[in-house]
Every structure is written in C-alpha cells, then in structure tokens.
Picture 1: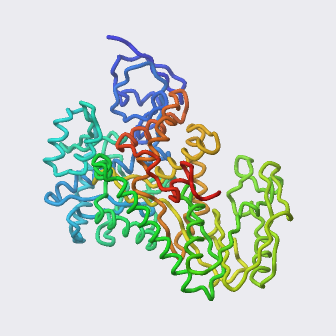
Picture 2: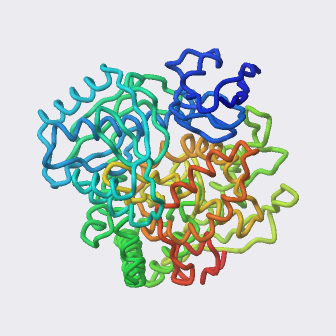
Picture 3: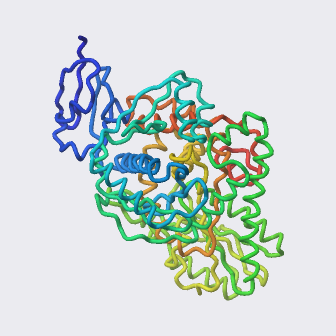
Length: 553
C-alpha cells in the first residue's frame, strides 16, 4: 500500500502512514486532548476529522475555542437539532432563521407557534443524542438518490438547491440514520456539544450557544427587539414574495423573471428608507442631527446619501459631516496591543473638537469643517467647507462610532436621531442552513477592496478577523440604542457578487493561510446562479461595492 507523509506543524513531528488513513486516527500526534479539536487544517484547508488523507500534507488542529472551531460547533449543534426535530415534529419540521446575539431563531415550517412543552421535548431529545456521543460522518450519494432522499424527507428547499448543481455525487452528513446536505465541516462526535440551551421566543424558539472566546459558558440572554423586528419583517416579506431560500432565487434567475424581482427588492428597500425619513420629519422641530453607524461594508455611505435625498423630498436641507476629518492624526492616535495605530477606537477622533463645532452649529454660528489628509496622516483646520444650520437644516453624520453617545456627549439626546445600518440577510441556503450576515458583508468588502483599492482577496480575508473584533467592541454593543434600523441587504446581491468574487477567491492558492476561507466561500457561492451586474440599478446600495454608482463618493 502507498505511504504518505503527514507533518504536524504544531509539534514539528512528521509521521508516515498509509494512503487513505483517516485524520481522526492521527490526532494523538497533535499533543492536544481529542475533545479540544474540532477539525484539521490540511494544507491550509479545513476538513472534518473523518477525512481520508490522500497526499503528503502539513496539518494543524482547528481548536474548538478558535473562531473556526466555534462555527463548526454551531453548525453541528444545528445539525443535531434537525435530527431531534425529525422525531419531535415528524409532520412539520423546523426552519432556521436569523441570528440574535449568540443564538439562532427557529420557527416551525407550518408557521404555528410551538408549545413550550414541545420545545422542552426537543431540548431533551438533543441532550439524549449528545449523551450517546454518536459519530457524525459524511459520505457521497448519487444525485438521483439525493433528490429522492430530500423529497421523501419533505426537504423541498434542499431539493431546489440541488437544481444549481450538476455533479453526479452529492456529499451529505450522516448521524443516527439521518442525512442532510453537507455545507461545511462538522464535529466528529455529538458528545463534544457540551453547552446549548433552547428557549421559547417570539413565534418560535432560540438555539443558544457560547460566544466566541467564552468556552462552555452561555451568557445571559440580551434581547435585541429592534434588530429582531427588522429581521422578522424581512423574513415575512421574503415568504410573501416567494424568495426565502437560495433555490427560490435561482428559480427566478432560471425563469428569467429576476429583473422584476430586482425592481421589487430595490423599491421595497427604498420604502424602508423613506419610512425612516418620515419618522425624522415628524420630529423636525427637535432633531438637528442624524447619526448613522453600522459594521464594515454595511452600505453606510450610500444609505446616508439616500437618506439625504429622502429628507430633501420632505423639504429639509441635510448637511453631511464626515467623521474621518476629525482624526487626531497618526502621531496622536492610540496604539493597539500590537503597537499599531488603532484608528477604530473612539480616542482616535478629536471628540472635544467635534463637540465644540457641533455646539457652535447648534448656536447658529458658521464653522469651517476640518480636512484630514490620509497621505500625511495629519489634520488641517482650514480649507474645508463652511457650513451653518438654518431652520430647515439637519446634520447627517456617518461613522463607526455614531451610535455611541460618548461621540457627541455635549449634545442633547433629544436632538439626535440614530440609525443603525447593517446587511441583515434573510435568505437561507435551505431550511436547516442559514447564511451568516458577516459572509454577505465580507464578500461586499472583498469586491470593493479589489475594485477600488487594488487589494487581493487574500488581503481582505487576512484583515477580516480584526475588522470583526472591532465591530464587536465599537458597534454591536450600541446597536440597541438606535432609533431606527435599516437593512441594507438585497436578497439578490450574492448572485451578483459571485460574478466578481469567484475569480478573486480562485486566485488564493493553497500555500496561503487564507486559502481555507477562500475555499469555504467558493463552496458557498456554488449554490448561487449568477446575475449579470448590468441588472443592478445605478442607485442601488450594491453599486457602492461593485462600482458605476450614480452617487459620488
């Protein structure tokens, strides 16, 4: 039998083994307890422990408490929930919705609200499956067998997803006789799922799990009613319009009715922005400033420009202020733990100077806005626009710290209206597999970085974890303080982003650490039929990322 060599990076040990040896048979060479390992990284690609090793490879463990391990944990927990639900709700089934903090929101496919006692039965069944410490494996079945399986199990959303595939073999996960579509690696055994909770919520229930870096600790639930309402409204709209899952979107593309859907999606989003403008107008006698914030690539800039137009339609005169011009400068910027300038912390901005100018504007005085020179890393106090607030004027301030009242601490809260903007994707892959909103934003960021900043996909992928850490610190803690939330996601956009992202991701080669994430995103995008970018309207938020926008940035 042929032999292969496996190099264990973390222990600098090389082992010779048989061709086809399972990764799970070699994990002792990592020198780490098996119950701390979620998967392996083989030649920079994350694979489940049941993988047969076929080539000489460098491998390292993917730890349960790592960001990748946490996502594997959550996917496996969702898989176990689906297994348990097939027993507790045999004639109904469950539908995974959006995230809510460190939770996923589930509803019954029928739309009925589950009884608290049934949620408890589901929880008990999950605990039994976990206690049995059952193996979670994967295998390939024929395309025809997969169609038959998912049809018999009434997984019609998954059947629709198969229509985008043309491969003769379909990969599925298997546990306790239950099979579901393989999307990403899962844990090797159910016994590793040591912490979860099921809690009745709304018209369904929450699957709760530990946060990143929290080990087995599930923190107390922190409700986010405004974000939940936005998500829920879009979910209901998706159901009405007939696009809840990717397969339904692909069907519209295949039937050449996608242009009508794009128009509907854009108009629906525009109405949501008009609603926010109406709320501001109703309080025009008090509100003097609108603050807009949101995570990276949420479309804040275009959202701000569209809000300006909506306010002008109502007779107001918006004046935009860029927070970037209030940076202190490289020399005065605080350093992060690596000794690098931390441009994302609040202290990187000259908050006292900003408040001084805002107070002057509130008193009816004219001010000259500063200008920040990113090339020199310094601010100029002159040369900027001169602005003054009239009776029908309103300031529009867009930036990362907009929702944090410490940014505008000297300004009366009653005169401020705060808007949280994020791409809150309501679309699912199928009934059991959701689309993380962060993936939507990551693909937007990657395309924009390539289009306008000359950055390769590997560069975007490399910095993304730091971007997310900044969001968790500076944005998400304040999202519930917003007066309104705007969903910038368009359910058709991933099919457009595929057109740009696919070649960018294929340029990331196996020698790079970022290869694992590139492979994951390529696998994800395979589920989408492409939409030509010329179908996207010039005023769409999506144009901020793909180019040719009718707005000037």
